Image (cartoon, rainbow, N blue to C red; front, side, top):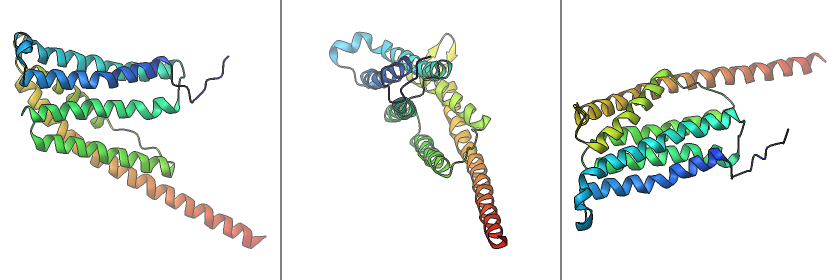
Length: 216
């Protein structure tokens, strides 16, 4: 069995991640032209929201695929571990900012969702530094699902197949913002418990070592 190089860059999961990064300017450009079309793009204006939507969906699917393939083939690299979460956040945040600029998402919702991601990233870095693991709650997963379903709907921003995508997408993005706050609170509480337990365990170990030394 060939030993894998954890500094490897050129593998299938990383290619999918880089493809997702390349799709970000495509989504941003399509949304911009949908609102501010140039003369030559006017005949295609009504299709640009749909185009942005499906590119976003395709890019989001690669987020699932690269993780699945990496786990299935046991491909864990430094480059992939760094770029994969960054690519996901870049895609979501840039799309949300464009939708806010197009007045399809309220600025407060964008602030809540973006700051929550920054806060959670900081907490996970702290957990990694402290050597503890706090599992993601189901609420966090529901938040991500609601957000990732809402955003393509708000890119189309019209009725489609009899569904009022504007209404459904707006409701879902507000649901996502509420769940983001609540799940961040639960994660914080779990983090504090883990930190207290870790501190207590270290203190007990130091005390046991001291007692052992004193008894020798």
